[in-house]
Amino acid sequence: MNEKKSSDSFTLTNNQTGDSFDFPILKGTVGPAVIDIRKLYADTGYFTYDPGFTSTGSCESRITFIDGENGILLYRGYPISDLAENSNFPEVCYLLLYGELPGPAEMKQFSHDITYHSMVNEQMNYFLRGFRRDAHPMAVMCGMVGALSAFYHDSTDINDIQHRLVSSHRMIAKMPTIAALAYKYTLGQPYVYPRNDLKYSENFLHMMFATPCEEHEVNPVIARAMDRILILHADHEQNASTSTVRLAGSSGANPFACVSAGIASLWGPAHGGANEAVLNMLEEIRTIENIPAFIERAKDKTDPFRLMGFGHRVYKNFDPRSQVMQRTCHEVLESLGIENEPLLDIALELERIALEDDYFIEKKLYPNVDFYSGLIFRALGIPTSMFTVLFAVARTVGWIAQWNEMVEDPTQKIGRPRQLYNGAKNRDYLPIENR
Image 1 (tube, rainbow, N blue to C red):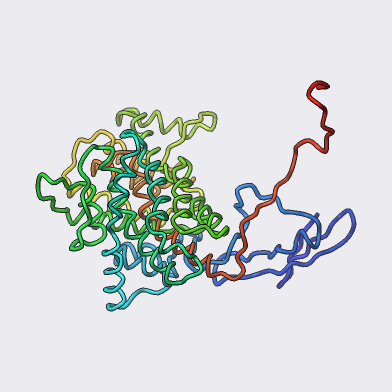
Image 2 (image 1 turned 120 degrees about the vertical axis):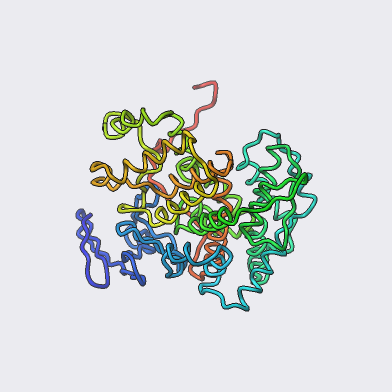
């Protein structure tokens, strides 16, 4: 079959039969137009074949826009750099959920609602104790978040707008608490309860690092860095975990189950584990003196070694989040007075080379957001097993915003991808004694 485009429709011609079929072209406010193929199978008897759905629009959305060719990321139309520099995470949560930046009264009420939902049911502590002490924190997160529907079943009616509102607030509020519980559990330390007098990122850091033995004061530079990290990771269009949340939600599943599914998808090393892979790479390099050899390996097409944290599947120019994360990384290192940390020294030298080397510049292999976030977490003393957990805390609001949008979309149907079958044709069954 060959294709040709017209101004308002897309014509497919079957070369075998000569039949032609027209399909509407739909245009969004920005970005590429799409071909509406909802009637493709009914009209032609064909499916499309698109492994990974990389050329398929699965939904309409007003939440996040990415232009990978020009390094653009917008939340509800606002550039990510503006929000990361000038906003705070609760304000961005409000924006993603409701479509507009809040006024003073709206922000006060929203902050109150989030703050006073941050505790989890005390019985969840007994549920947590059922895990092995060496359980991976992401495994704990999957189980704990999925279990929320058992503890908060009064907000699981997806057809009730008030239920959706309450469950959205609960999810955003409780995710840092659950993440801190998982962290403390692996350390064998007492759980630290949320404090209503602290801001969102401050409260999260306090639950992570405080102990009952002494007062813990959160470093404002670190709190601001955490706020930026959460903002930069809050949503990223129809990525694997977000698509998972939407697909699970399309069946009518409750939001806690859907987000638990999203966490499971995020756990994959090809998705949320990239910043952990960066540190593994730095440990493999070992010393600054070894960097030139690894740079040459990265340039060698016959060598399977790849520099992790450079370039991006979506951003073909530069990752717009990485510039903010770069400044934040250096602010954190300076604030903590970290010097002579081998992995950080290697990372900073790699950064310098990548920004100056002609090969990296020509290939547009700039350090991405995962390169810097891993370094920040390392500097804070957060173990690599917790990196993806922090990613999940940030991405929860994006998942919830996308889930709400999907539930309210009258055109949304239960997800049911098709396939190209290459198995056996119809075969006759033989009794076991005749085989």
